[in-house]
Amino acid sequence: MQTIRKISDLKIGHKVILSERQSRLTKLPRKFTISSQDEIFKLSSAKFDSVHINTVRSVAKKNIRDKTSQATSEKKKPKNPEERAKLIHQESISVSRELFKNPNLEAIKNAKNAANIIAQYIKQDEQVAMQLLALNGYDYTTHGHSVRTALVATCFAQFHLKCSNSELSELAIGFFLHDIGKTKVDPNILNKPDKLTDEEMELMKKHSLLSYRILEKTPSFSKICGIIALQHHERNDGTGYPMGITGDRISEPAKICTLADIYDALTSKRSYKAAMKPADALLLMRTKMIGHFDRNLFIKFITMFSPKAHLSP
Ligand SMILES: [Fe+2]
Image 1 (cartoon, rainbow, N blue to C red):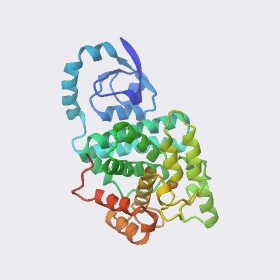
Image 2 (tube, helix red, strand yellow):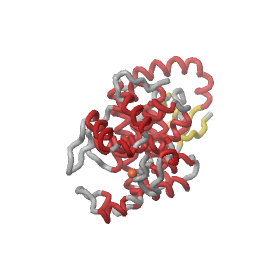
Image 3 (tube, helix red, strand yellow):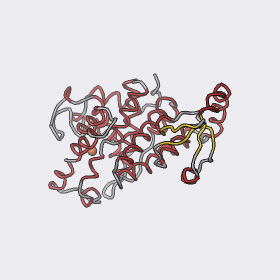
Image 4 (cartoon, rainbow, N blue to C red):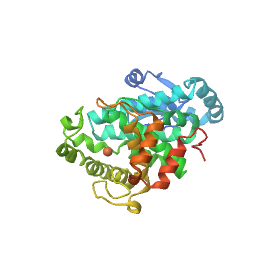
């Protein structure tokens, strides 16, 4: 018996039946049993809402499936955590690129799926999470920055908040989409290779409110996604925007997004500056920007990058 299942609800062990087109676009077989998160990722990256699954076979062979899927999962996964992290990064970038090119509801849904998968990896595979945290030195693009901010912020949320799977997924969606409002900013300003003038900067600053407006009206998104977007440029000392609120009035997930956002901006290349090394970026944040951050949260953020840190509970 076949049934239609949303991509976001797929799990390892589901017997998937793809159309010829779906198979061609994902480079996955027409019929297969999901044996790894990477396969779910490929399906979500290809922008399908749903696929057919074979429920009879999935239920009838459940016990065998549980054993074999684990084994095949190990076989099919890229060999080491670094390769797995690179694959997640690449797939997320392609989803994010499409989102910023064409920010329709479908692209937002795909970003939501990608964020869910990022959260699952970070929750379940600490080695991959550590590799995701180590990604830096890339060229700054809006879509790439959104992904790496989401990766670092989701790792930090897991490290600091130890939240449930669903809570971590909700935060990851907010982190992934925190800059979606930039799609409403003049592309000449958004893609300007040089530093922005004061006037251009004022227009650019509208993006956090624009992000909030997009996310608050997106069906099925929790309130925290919009709050992360709205507050990710607020500063602990009240010098941020759009509201200039201070300390306790800024939500903790937004503060986490701020730290990841600035860390990625510093460790990315731009036409007018080289990428900073992670240690140098953290030092600059401590010496020149500390008033921007919640001090205790920042100390914990630095601790996360220590080789002895553990992201799992
Ligand atoms: Fe932003």
